[in-house]
Length: 164
Image (cartoon, rainbow, N blue to C red; front, side):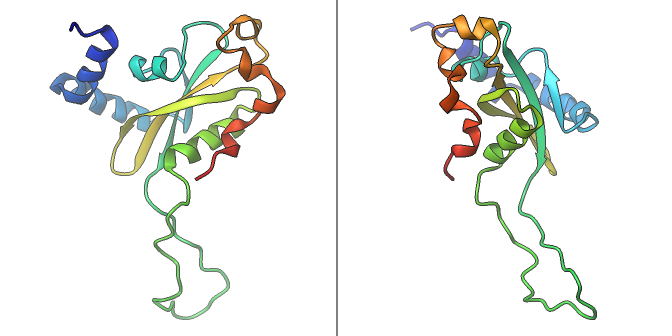
């Protein structure tokens, strides 16, 4: 059976040396950008389309980054030595990094709704995701029979209702 375009994009993203070199160049550039950056087109068209993205008004792609790994708790108001068992390190998040980033992007753009997200790269410090956002007040979205569900009131800020 013949493969479709999106299957070829997916295979190229995973396997080829050209994609690896392109990712490396992009990561170098992305490190200098702000934490959240609106993007014209999705980096991974196959994943964006699978999550419901369409190239029309009302859809916005935001690339965001966040630090990998757990966090370190602050040690406030203590003089002298630090006990090794003070419980300062190894605090892992209770949610996945992708879910955390979706929530941060939702807070940054409160007038848009998160539709989904997918990873686009990582280095030793950061992990980058692209978040697909929809403007529920846009007339094009309100008329689209497959997307008008997101304009209803019960779907507002749905990213914060996820379990995990």
